[in-house]
Amino acid sequence: MVAGSIEDFLAQLPDVVAKPELVLLDVGLPGLSGIEALPLLRRQLPEADFVMQTVFDDADRIYQALCAGATGYLLKSTPPAEIKAALLDVARGGAPMSRAVARKVPGYFKPAPSSPLASARCSRA
Image 1: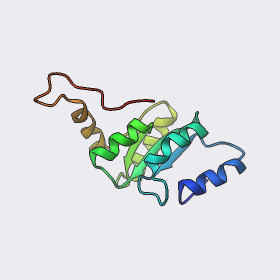
Image 2: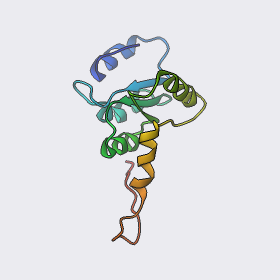
Image 3: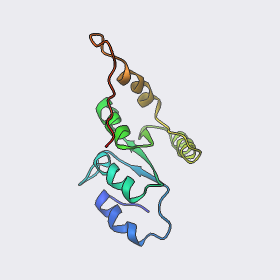
Image 4: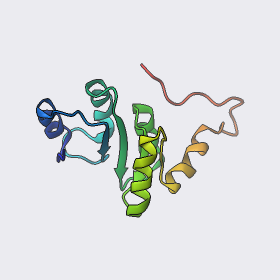
């Protein structure tokens, strides 16, 4: 199933016989962004994994996507063989990230020098 927007994807979903187990999302979609759509999509497809595949590698978008429930975050510059391996990893229960993305994640959770304790950055409703 291929859709150019979240709205198109949701319109096609009722007609799909086999519900998707893995959904690739871009951050910069027309209409709802991939990040904005994640909570809605997780309710519609609770058994599915959602992997962001995008050009955006800034820390804020990465963390927003992960906090919203993305299973993984891959940059579009990732070579096709690595993307294939990452998607197979998802099928085995993994949570793949492009190397440049994975490198940013630990830094997000380090306490600030002036802060005695790190606070949780993601809040789940």
